[in-house]
Structure formats: structure tokens, C-alpha cells
Image (cartoon, rainbow, N blue to C red; front, side, top):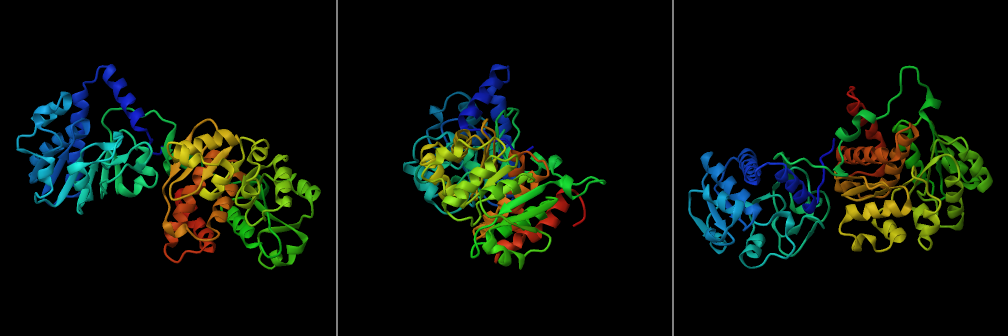
Length: 480
């Protein structure tokens, strides 16, 4: 199972349910504070520690962590945003466990230290940091944050103003949107989740092979190519054929039993010169495309297809066939002036794979008006009536009923021409073998990211599909 993702509000409700069932809230705070102490001591075993405590629950965690670190023979100094006498409830009880002096936050600005534990405000903050807290956030140095780096809205995943930049963050029960969505994720460092006895019930999870590994398709001993499905990819014109071939090759590597490139007659010779295991078929007009789609398990259209009336017609033809469809690139942009016309034709098993620009052409200002990218993906999938894979360093995969997977397993080297075409092909190749569209999208995003990580600097799109045999073998537990 991938790590669950809870909003700060969902986390509060989960905690309240645990408290209502009879668990003492201070017991939960003690578990959290002890987890912070262990996290810091294990991963940062050297250096004097400055613990910054806020006035609420996050600060209570900090006081308990400070006491725990002192028991581990660490040199610890503690500073608080308010006088200790003003603390209330569990935060006051936590402060009483710390036996050393407590300075005011302003004093921390000049106090010597090597590590900072940021236990000021966490992910529930709704206003910018100011005063000493803002000055501390702007100070250079090594920071470990509790819950979410202070100054960041844990729900919208956006800095509210000055904010801490952490080397590592420890959160509780589940991830928050800020841990997986940009820009906030860039401030969190390595994020770990501590179990504090609060169950996380959510429909959003972080992508991981643990989520879908058991469903990864592989042929049985008696299988043959036709049982593994037939993928068909629509090629662009004579001077725009490469993108479709990238998708086709990736689909074949991902396990589709047969792959056919559907080519305009004018591009047949160009495509034929570059294909071996992939079959080639001339398709001239909507009637021939409909006939070709009749034997397709899955179809891909969009990579360098052309933003033309013909592409729009071809999309309509494929969406009337029995084949599930992956729509990418030009197949999305061609509906920029009439997205409702596209949405009316889509089926639940189809997948849209837009990057941010293509998403905005279809869904308008949804990215800027939705609370965060997860919610934007959910709303888009509901509006389109199919799976939406919104690409990026924080890829969001959403289905119409509200389930979401966020993929952060990627690399900046994937920002290169043709990378998305390969992703569309991997996705389609998995779907062709019978994987449901939402699960296939999660699989494809992770595998695509892993391929990019393995290639690293200098990556070009053609490199990605060559990594798939080793990646798939490793996922199946077989030697590469």
C-alpha cells in the first residue's frame, strides 16, 4: 500500500475520532514527541540542537522531543513563541516534561546551535510567519521539521510567506499534501511518517509498487502474443512520426503482445524505415481508422498527431470503438476551443495524460482555483468522466469517483522532448494486458520515473524504453 495522504483537517478529524474512542490526547502527543526525538537522533546523530516550539500541539511535540533528545545525551536548548506560563492544555503538560530553561523565540536568533528542530506551527498554519519566526525561517542552517515546515500551508502546499527549508520532516499517521506537491515538497526534504496510533482513512495515496505490484501483468506459461492484447498507435504525418514510434516502442516493451503503428500513407516509408517488431498499417481516413480500431485492445492518439480537424475526427472515431484510449498531446490541444465536446465522448476506461499547459487548455483555471493539485485532478477527472494523469514532478492520477495517486518517483532529467510520449506508451502497454486504467496509470508513472532515475543526466526519450526490461524484471522479482 502506498503511504496515505491526509489534509490537515482530515488529520484533525482522525485524531478527534481516536480521542472520542477513549485514547488520551496527551498519550498521542507523547508518542509524537518521542518519535521526533528518535527521528532526529537516528538521522542526525551529531551536533547541538535548538528546538523551536510553537504555542500549540506542534510545540508540545517539540518539548517532548527536546526531553527525549536530552535523555539521549544530546545538548539541547529550547525556545518558545510564547511564555511557558501562557501555554495551555497538552502543550503545557508537554512543556513541564522539559527540565531545562526555555528562552523566547527572539533569543534563538543569536543562540549557538548546529541543528534546528522546527516545532513551531506545522501544516495547519493559515497565516504568514512574522517577527522572530519569520527571521528564523530566513536564517541559513540545518533544519528538521515536525509535521510540515513552518510557514507552509499543509493543505494548499504553498508557502504563505517566509518558511523553513528542512533537510528532513517527520509527520504523523499519513503524509500531507505539502509533502508530495510542489512547491511545498521542495521545502520538506526527506519525509518520514510515524505511527502514533491514529488510523488514516483516505482516498489519496503516494505512488509505490507496494500499491500495485501484485497486479503487475506478466504472461502465463501458456500465453501467446494475442492473449497479451493488441495496442494501436496513431502516427502523425511524414515529418512528425517520431513521437508515435516512441509510444509504440514503449508499449511493446511494457508487455503488449502486438503493437501496430497506424500511419498516413504519406508517412509509410518513413515509419517502415524505423520499425522491426512493431507492425505498420496504412490508414487513410476515418473509415479505415475505424476498421483498424476494431481489432485494437487499446489505442493511443496524440503524440505529434497534429492540431488539425483530422485529429479531432480521429479521436471521435477511436472513442466510438471498443478499444480503451490514451489521449495525449495534440489529441488534447485540438479540443482547446471545445473541451465539452471531448468530455461528452469519453468513457470511464479512457485516460487523458496532459501536462500543465494541456490541462489548462481543457480545464481552464482549475489548477489556480482548486485548493491544490490533488483537488484539481479530482475535479478534472469528474468533469471528463475518465482517468486523468496530470504530469509533472508531482504527477497526480485521479479517477472520476475521487481516488487519487500522487507520483513523486521521478527526476528532473525527464524534462525533455518525447518523455511524455514514452509515458503514454508504457501506460497503454499495461492497459493492453488488461490492467484497469487507473492502476495502469499509477504503474506507468512510477516505472517511467524509475527509468528516468536510472538514466540520469544526459537522458533523451529514446533511453527510457531501454530501461524497462530491467525495471520490470526487478518488479517481478526476477534477475534483470
